[in-house]
Length: 241
Image 1 (cartoon, rainbow, N blue to C red):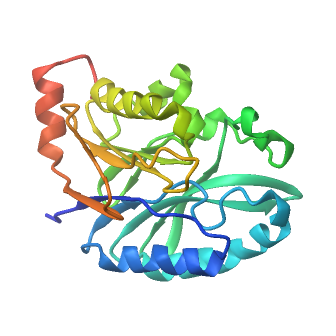
Image 2 (cartoon, rainbow, N blue to C red):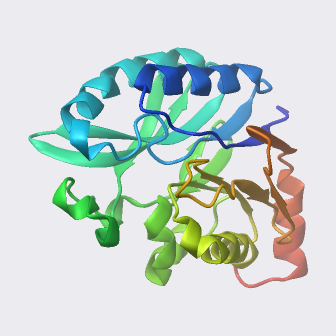
């Protein structure tokens, strides 16, 4: 049986997209084989609305580079792309040289004017997908705040949370990500940006709700033990299969 590692990334997004991509690729390269890696939301470009066409143009470059880096690894992040004349913030799962799952952000952060630049995806696309034997759900940043969406992650082994979460609401991010792990009795891998306006509270929470945060580490690594999930669900049986 494969031994997987969970990795939460924490790094700053600079105005240079290529530099950001190289930072990401370097961190991915440093992780163990069979790692599940979560990077911050829009970590390659941020919400660079003043240069939005450049952001969209960079998506193809980013996708191809990350595909090449994804052999024997699961990489989760978001990338802004145009589809059929509309612009979306896509959560993507890369594995073994391919994008094996993607969906558009379903709840845009209107306080940050995301809705003025992008279209919303559908709640219906939020679901659990199995990759390399791990059942994965994804919540993109602001989606965490909608309790009706939480049930869509019930039964996941790992919930990935790529985020660009405001520093003024740091305690919210910490509390919600921990609670998500406790309620779902699963691992949560949260990755927030190191940018000045963000929480920098990337971390990994286990099914018991025990939290480790990255601190100053660009890559926080923890073992993935599926037995912890089964034991917690048996010990505190709340009907999660």
